[in-house]
Amino acid sequence: MTIGMPPVYLALPILIITYILIIIDRFDRSVIALLGGGAMVVSGVLSQDAAVKGIDFNTIGLLTGMMLLVSIARRSGVFEFLAIWSVRSVNGSPAGLLCVLSAVTAVVSALLDNVTTVLLVAPVTLSVAERLKIPPFPFLFAEVLASNFGGTATLIGDPPNILIGSAAGMDFNAFLLHLAPIAAIVMITQLAVLHLQWGRSMSTTAAAQAEVAEQNIWACITDIRLFRHAMCVFAFVLLGFTTVRYTGLEPGTIALIGGAALMLLENLMHPREKQLDNVASTYGEVDWITIFFFVGLFIVVRGVQSTGAFAWLAQNLTDATHGSLALTVSIVLWGSAILSAVVDNIPFVAAMIPVIHALGPEMGSDAATLPLWVALSLGACFGGNGTLIGASANLAVAGIAQRAGIPFNFVSYTRQALPLTVISIVISHIYLWLRYLH
Image (tube, rainbow, N blue to C red; front, top):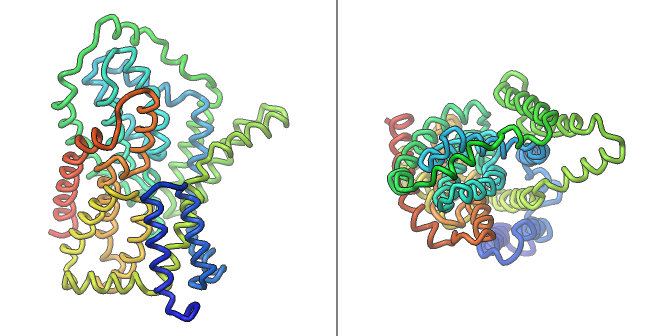
């Protein structure tokens, strides 16, 4: 009992109020999540020790380490290099550029994270569109979709996947094996649709194409030494991700070691004072709002989990589907997609993880829940494309576009994105059926 009543009667209202305030977006979401976590402790639902144990430090370490790596690598000009290379590789053709920029965004989002990727690629896209005198909206729109598709393919590409990987014990290779194929299929399908809709009708002038073609691509690399160090460290980090089965290291440990190593390499040749400035600047560029949002959210979700509410929900879901794995997978996929289109997919996935864990015994074994984890990832990541508020990457691009005077509001985005999202979920449903349920 807690303050004279069962803990669930306190935990559920705290969860609901926290999520409502996050959705309303009137206050910073990290503050709301931390206050929600604090409420779980103060009300007695969780002890302080239990609250700390509820924080998934592997997820926190992975996010922080990758943010450090990206923050330092960005200073070398590597992302501008990739964007200009994309333009030159298609000789400034708008249709070709739509495909290549989308592909670059997807690949980089798979190796870094989709929010960071769009924050780096979108401003360069605006510059390129201005030079070629073509409308930027189709490119920005395509990059939002591509970032979420690419992020779906790997453990580190999208925050929901980091949560799922840590909870389900799925490593980097497992995500590549189970999610990269469908991410590629959906990506190709969407590019074909966007080409028919926009790509084939866009045109530019020969003079504008020539201007872009004459640009010195290597001039984008402002620090060649840092560029080389960053590429080497990224290579070792990715190698570490793919060999966790043999090393026993967690992805969070690998990412933090990589971030620290690149900070050291960046500062080796600088005097002590300059090193302190660089390190402080790098730490300052970490998205601490996201980090503390996760910390608070983990505590809120652990509070509800400790009451048995998620186990009860899992039991009712099993009863409703009569233990049918196929029906449960369908509900998880479509339910995740619909809800992730209207709320941020990160808190939704955090709430669903304990439910799927509780379904393990009902399905016969934890291994039997693999299709459910895949369905949750596909529904949450692809569903996040459905509306402007469905994923953080969407809002990041909208902010960049609107600051540049380009209409990128809820209605204009959702009108284009919702039909494409439905297509991606239908394809995902077929994939899940053929691969796991047939």
